[in-house]
Amino acid sequence: MTDWTSGYVAGIDYTHDFHSQLTPALLGFGVMSQGHRHSLQGDGSTYCELGCGQGFSANLLAAANPHVEFHAMDFSPSHIAGARELTQEAALDNMHFHERSFEDFDTAPGLPEVFDIIALHGVFSWVSAENRQHIIRFISQRLRPGGLVYVSYNAQPGWAAAMPLRRLLAGRAEQGSGPLTDRIGDAMAFAHQLGAAGAAYFGKNPAAAKRLDHMKSMPANYLAHEYFNKDWTPFYFEDLAGELAGAKLDFAGSVHPLDNLDCIRFTPEQQALLNSEGDPGRREGLRDVLLNEHFRTDIFVKGKLSHTPRGEIGAWFATPFALTRPYSGGTLKFHYRGREVPLEQEQYAPVLKALAEGPATVRSLLDHGVFGAMDWGSIARMLTILAGTGCVTPCLPQEGLAQRAAACRAFNLAVCKRAEDSDTLRFLASPVTGGGVEADRFEQLFLLARSEGHETPAGWAELAWRILAPQGQRLQHEGRVLETEEENLALLGARAGNFAARRLPLFESLGLTLEDTGQSTGQDTGKDQTGALAQDTAA
Image 1 (cartoon, helix red, strand yellow):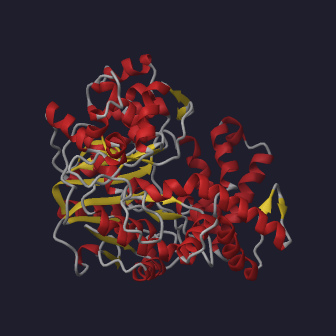
Image 2 (cartoon, one colour):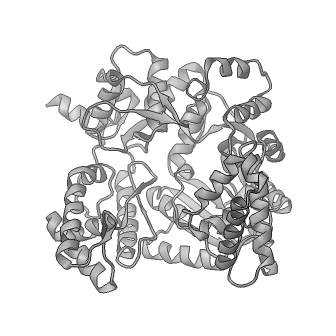
Image 3 (cartoon, rainbow, N blue to C red):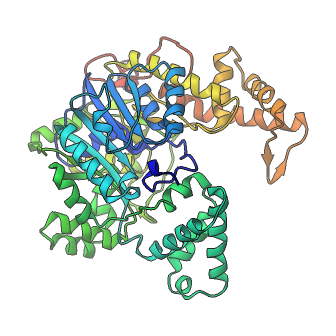
C-alpha cells in the first residue's frame, strides 16, 4: 500500500452498485414517518456523499433529482475518473466529483457553504479514527441546521462472532505478496483449511462458519473493501451516536421503514423490555441486542424539529407513493428478518391496485376510499410495511416531472449503451421515485432496441443477439450453455416477451423508457396529484 491510502484498500476498485438508502425521497420519508420535519422539497437543495466509491449512486441520484445540486468525493483517482466519465456521457450539470481525502475535502473549490444532506454508506466503519474526526469536523462546518446525515455502518453485537475471522483474513492477506485478489483468495482458502482441520473457533461460532461460506459467492472487489482494510470498526450504537454528537447531531430513525416499527420487529415480551428503558441511546442499543444487529442504516438530524400531530398527518397526506413491483391481484406474503409480517389482503390489495394505475398521494387514496374503514394508525402502519417490503416507495411530487424525465432519459441511455459491452451497471434512474430501479443487461438492451425503432419482442431479441454474438457470449439455460444461434435467439425472445408483459408496464409507469413520448407517467397534473386513479373515476 502507498502512503496516500491511509490504510484503505487501493489495489482493487469498489463495486458499481446503487445504494437505494441514499435516495433523498427515502431519507425524507424516514424522518417524516418518525414525526420529524425536514425541508428537502423544492429546488436549490444540496447533497454531499463522502466516500462515493465509483460514484454510480451519486450519478444516478443526480439524474433523478436535477433540482438538487450533488457533490461527491473519494480519494481514489480511478473512482473519480470513472465517475466523471459517466457524468459527461449523461450530461449531468448538477453533479460534481472531487478527488480528495477526508482531511482536505473542506478546502475543495466550488463547494457550497452548507449542505442539506450529507451521506456516508459504510464508510464510517472502514476508516481510521483520525479520518472519522475529519468527517465529523466537515459535517459540523458544512451541514445546514435542520439538515440530515445518513450513515450506515457495521454494528455490534452482530459482528462480534466474526471479528476474529476478519482479523484472520486481513492478517493473512497482509503477509502475502502479489496482487490483492490473489492474496484474498489465499486468505479465504487458509480460513477454510482451518475449518476443515477442526478449528474450535468455527465449531463454537457457527455464525462465523456460515459467514465464511457465504463469502464464496461475493465478488473480490466487495470483499476487499469490506474485510481487508487496515481500519475496520463495527460500532455499538451508543458509541457512534456519541461521536456524531460532536457535530450536534441527534438520531432521527432508520432509512429502512420496517426498522422503525417495533410492532413488526419485536414480540410483545421484547417490546415490554424496550419500553422499560427510558434512555434513547441505550434503548437503541437494546434493540440491537434483541436483533443481534450487524448493519445499521441511520438518519441523524442537526436540530431535530417535531411535527405537531396535525402537521404529521398533513405531511403523510402530501406524500406520494408509487408501485415498485407488478401487482395483478391475489395474496401476497410479507416477510422481514425471517418473520412473516401480518397484513390482510382486503387492506393492501385496493392500495396496490390503485397504484398500479399510477403514483398517487395518500390524500388522493383517502379521497377515493382506497383504505375503507381503516383508522389512521392502521393506514400509516400498512403503508410503512408496503414501503419496507419493497412493494411501493415514497416518490417525488408531480412538479418538476418533465425536467426529471429528460435528465433520466439521458442518463438511462448512457447506461443502456454501456450494456452493449458489459453488465457492470444494473440500475436505471426513475424521474418518478427520484431513485434507482434494478434492470439487468438484457432488459437494458431491450429498452435500447425499443428506442431504436424495434417494436416487437422478437426485434429486441435480435438486436441483443447481434450485440452478444460477436463478443462470443452465449446464454445459459438449466445449467447448459446454449451454443447455436437458434437456441440463443429463442431464449432471448422468451425473455423479451416476458419483459414486455410483466416488467415494461412498470418501467413505463416509473419513467424508465428511453423515448420522449411526451406522456405523463401516470401522475395527475393537478395540485391534488390523484394520478390515473382520478382519471378512471371520472370516466
